[in-house]
Amino acid sequence: MTHWLLAPILIPLLGAILQIFVGYAPMPLRRVLAIVTSVLTLAAAIVLLNLAGDDTYRVYAMGNWQPPFGIVMVLDRLAAMMLVLTASLALLCHLFSIGGADEGTRQFHSLFLFQLMGLNIAFLTGDLFNLFVAFEILLIASYGLLMHGSGSTRSTPGLHYVVLNLVGSSLFLISVGMIYSVTGTLNMADLAVKVPQVSGDQRFLVEAGGMLLLVVFALKAAVLPLTFWLPRAYASATAPVAAFFAIMTKVGIYGIIRVYPLIFGANAGEMANLGMNWLFPLALATLIMGVIGAMGAQTLRTLVTWQLVISVGTLLAPIALGSQKGLAAALFYLLSTTWTVGGLFLLIELVRSQRGSVSDKIVMAPQIRHRTLLSSLFFFGAVSAAGLPPLSGFFGKVMILQSTTSGVEMAWLWGAILTGSFFTLIAYSRAGSVVFWRNIEGEIENSTPVTPLLAISTGALIGMSVLMVALAGPISAYTNATAVQLLDTRGYIQTLQAPMVEEGS
Amino acid sequence: MELVFALAIGALTAGGVYLLLRARTFPVVLGLTMLSYGVNLFLFASGRLATGSQPVLGTAAQYADPLPQALVLTAIVIGFAMTAFVVVLSLRNLADHGNDHVDGDPKKHTPASKHARERRPL
Image 1: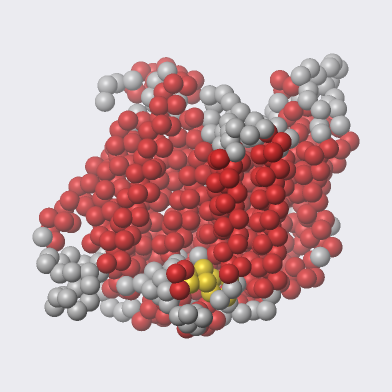
Image 2 (image 1 turned 90 degrees about the horizontal axis):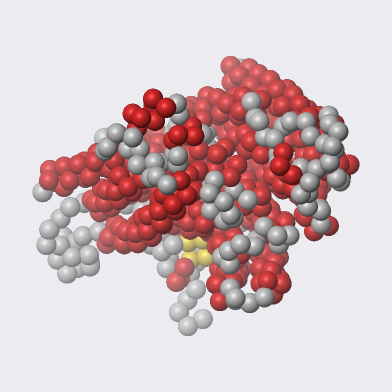
């Protein structure tokens, strides 16, 4: 039992509590403490990534209670990958925020770190109810972050976001109750053992619970009928918060990848692959809806929020098909798209700060300062997001396309992804050429200079797609091994037999 | 007892859903509260309903499942905090827009006739 498993939870927790106590300290001190916490979290995540590389499951039993009776933290390849992704995105967004976005309220850094903690609990937990608690922690921090900043435009989208997520929490509890009432356990490994044994009338209760759980994850991931809260909520948040929220939809996707192959996977007997035949058409519809939204976007910010919806659809389609290659490809694309979309959110804030009252509207305006830097960053981000070679978005999409076996699904998937990418490309070209190239005479007032810190954090996030191409071999080897580990549920079930520490040792 | 319990859950949930769909923040908050009461009772029932049994093994012929009780306790605490937050957020919404419509100021978004219809007292 290694205590490192708790580090990504404890470090942001202690850092956030510290931030509450130093709320009246000078700003530079608070910022240094906050960034140090983020850096330490990333370091802990990288340590766990190294630990997880040997394909064994590591279990941390809280209070030394033998699973399935106590709460367990489980580290595997998927959890470690998500931890590193989250911690790196958080660090760069955090660096961007100390460029000025954290002013206004004293709670920004503590909320940010609490949200990081909630995300890390969600990725590490091996218990369905604890996953609910993690969702609540990250949601209540996100409610606060969403409202951060000045002006009255945020309260209404914030209210919608909060009410919708509270309804989602109620559904989560109902599904947990349904599953518990039949199986008598909420430990994921134990559920993977018990669910295939359920038979007769009780099966329908578990099935209903499982489908409700899928609805909850789909709400978090913004899958089509539940997608329309996302653009307004994200469009009103401050830039580093919106960029960090790029990981929030991925939490829903993580929930689906974690729960469904394990508990309702191929070994689940009568309930094998529960809900996945629903998820596939919905994923494609989400993809198309995202493309339509991106085509109709009036501002750069809206364009990128719809890009998030597009990536959710692209990710869920191969996950619903459930092949090992498809899962590996989806995980690769997940890394690429999260970093790119986060970077684009930050970049658009920089563009917006240069354009005065025009803000980020896709209309002609006088030439902006730092045009070369900002437009080339936009070019890289757009190329990666639309999936053109040579950046990582292209490789992710090609892997997804290659993972399908010929049949009806292949036709639908290829059609949706290729057409979608083409129209996304048009949306980005139109936005980029109007904003950066077609200038009118005049001078922009109220533009704020781009400081090196802001440019570096933005450039680093967008540059991740270049890095991913350079390291494509090791990364795809890792995601392949992750997919193998996910589909072989015996390893996860073995965590039930994890040896506990003897008394007195 | 089962029938009364089920009817209570059903009534709370139905009332909660109805209130959630109203156009003012106050009924929406009440609806969320009623929904969470219904959900808490439902969670409690997932450990089976029994009277006179204890959540300790060996003290009575029938034992009550202690885990749903722990789950409900957690859900109550979280639900309470969330309700408090929604109330504050609704007040902020009221202060920002001068009315408690869930869409902020509907005058900005909807045509006048629809606006007049929505201004009907609840």
